[in-house]
Length: 116
Image (tube, rainbow, N blue to C red):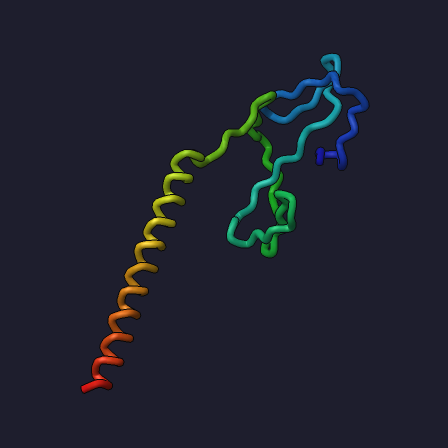
C-alpha cells in the first residue's frame, strides 16, 4: 500500500529509495506506507504474512529505512536445526527404550510376585 492507497505504477522500470519513494524516470509516483505499532503483542495473524492490530491504531513512519533490491535471509541455520532435530529424535528413542525396559521390569516383578 502506498500513502495514496493501492500502488499502481504501470511499468516495471521503477526505482525506490531508502525512504520508500517510488520513482519512474526520476519522477516520484508514490511512497510505500510503512506503519509501526505501539504494542506488537496486540497483533494477530491474518494469514500470508499479514497481521491485524487488536489494540491501538498503527502510526505511519515518517523516515522508514528500506533496502532496495535486497533479499532478506533466513534467521535460522538449516544445518544446525537439522542437527538439533536429529538429536531430539535420538533422545526420544532413548527415552522410549528406557520406558520399555521399565515396563518389562514391572511386568516381570508382577508375575514373579504372583508366583511367590
